[in-house]
Image 1: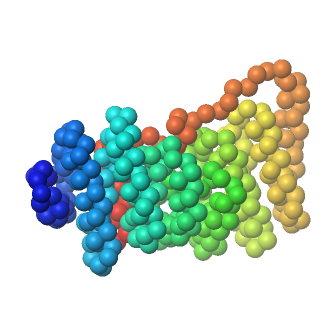
Image 2: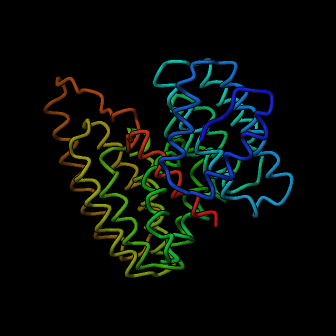
Length: 337
């Protein structure tokens, strides 16, 4: 199965997409991607890309719910193609795909939104401004939907966690816009599913916490403190006790960070928790206060030590190959069914 380099390219694409949907196997999608990429004919590649996006637009203009599988195949091909261009440092072609992706960011399609977030967090990683624009535009509705699917504990729960495992970190990267968004989304699940929520926080932190960059780690701690404070106000004893234990564990996990970073984490924690006068808060405040004092004394004794900046590989919790991106994208599209 090949895309033909002739004037009937639109018809060829339609036939090929339907063929890929019918056969479902990833190897056929990989074959199509490699055929386009290995042609090394940029004019031909641009025509294919333009027509794939046009096919997407046609799906949206009709009944998008009837064409989800076709949309999934198109977006998967475009995403992996762009990744190959970036690896080759062919930024002319990767930017061509990126610009077309951005121009569709106003679509209400859930499939498009999943693809956009994945594209700008896992593929076009240097587009930090665009990531924030996407999050500001539809971040809450997207992450709220994914969290709902995770906590529904159905066949999509495992896929939903994988999506959160790869993408949730970007919601902790910019405090000004992300604070109420991620806090409200997590708070909603904390109130609806307290036990499952605690298990989720433990699971996510175990997988990702040490990989977060400086700002994301600080903001993550702050969000947990805000949720802990809310659990006190609502008298959710189980959640309060569990989040208190988790918070202290987190602060210990971050022990390999520069001391100034740790001090900042402790101060933020105390500032937030001191605002809540509940009696249950006293013990954790005292414990954190003692740890902070130890940390400050250590800093004073070692003030001449030069601390290296903490860095994570590519500032992303996960790095994956083309094959795993293809598999992940195919799975993530199931969340749209």
